[in-house]
Length: 55
Image 1 (spheres, helix red, strand yellow):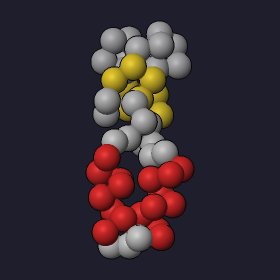
Image 2 (image 1 turned 180 degrees about the horizontal axis):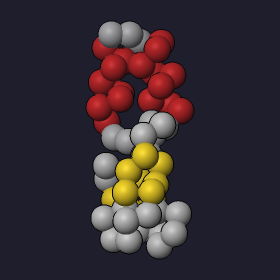
Image 3 (image 1 turned 90 degrees about the horizontal axis):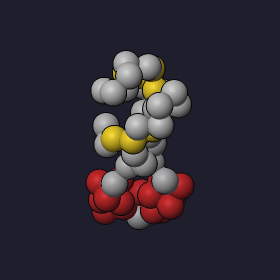
Image 4 (image 1 turned 135 degrees about the vertical axis):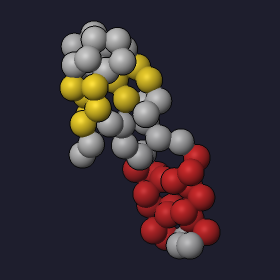
């Protein structure tokens, strides 16, 4: 997983991933299901300060 630094405190945070339903739809309805991955990604949350941002 990708590591990003928090824009607020510079602590390393793990980038948010995709939700399970998005991955299942993408596999079952390939190639049209790939649109499910474009819907959204889980936001990235800093483990130290709790700041949430979309990365």
